[in-house]
Length: 546
Image (cartoon, rainbow, N blue to C red; front, top):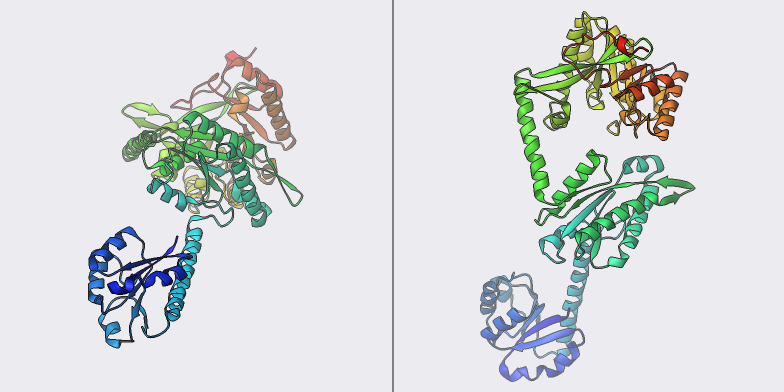
């Protein structure tokens, strides 16, 4: 952009500016004017960077009026005054008067002053560019950042019609284990990989780098199907790539949220889609319209209201599903399962448990289940299990609540605390301490969904547990899938080596039961025997004996 200088001089001097113009023309545009009307015209047509004015021709108060009329800040444009220094002029004006130049001096002095103003402007311009770069660029990858995308969308500069937000899974663990230097190198490698993935659609899909381990693809001019394919291929490439750092081979994967919403809330919708994908353990989720998340919001509001009503009316209840001893076919224990009564219907936790977390009622529900379960089994001879999550365990007051209820109902020797080992566990020491404490009180502990993606054999060796509950996704396929069969067999053998008992859940038919019994699983639980019931009054299943 050229540096534009406006000369305000008397008419007979306008032609004398030719030589001056030639000296300044290399990287400047020089304009000459001698009337108020022309000044307004030129200001509207050009970005003026410097004003050189002969105050005998145009009073500075008139120039002030012009700038005010055009809504230009007084201190925005420096002014060189052709004439001798006048203190009164400086004191009486709000304008940015940079200097006075004696007309009798050689014009070279004027050119030097102008060049100095130009150099100051150039430095300011570079400073603004640097600030803009810092504001709109990710420092690590040098990719445009989230702020830049927001500006692009807001100004409609690139016409974004869809967005995919890509998040590296469990990146915090990579950083913690390998260190930030390796973590940063991986982030740069992923950026390079994604750039390579979209090379063939350059200018149609743009890559942005958000904070931490998050990237964004902005679709400018591709059909939905092709853009979705690019997202899928990108996720696959990230997963299949082996990242080599300091003799380490690191595998990573990513999750994406995609939106094709026609509205301006694309970033919000894509974030919601990403959260949905993580919650549902999917590689990616697509929201085609903002109605997708509006419906989810409405659904959450509905169940929040129903949950509050159930809590107020003591309609959070407990159902019980029997666990059958595979050798005797007697019911040795029950699992306690939360239910909600709504308009005389029994509602499964699928509909309200996640909502309870958002409504800060989850821990209250756990306490209700504990209270009602303890009371139910106080005078029964069955063992019974209660599900607790890391969210419950990390509450420092939770163990005191347990101790108080155990003292009240005297059921410590019957209670099995069923713990799910999942990605929500932030500190294993908290989990280990909880297990040790409840064991010291006389309770038992089971690990739920063992064999799922989050199970950790090493952690298990550090836990003083009594039961392993084999993940339902393995059990339901154990009679039809060789791989599931082998995994279940390995888990049972591993448990036996540690003197742990195993529970096979999701035993839905005789074929599954026969296999898990043959493999040596201790207990079976599932609809083959019974759905969850309102009273724990089933004692055996003799008709299953051969």
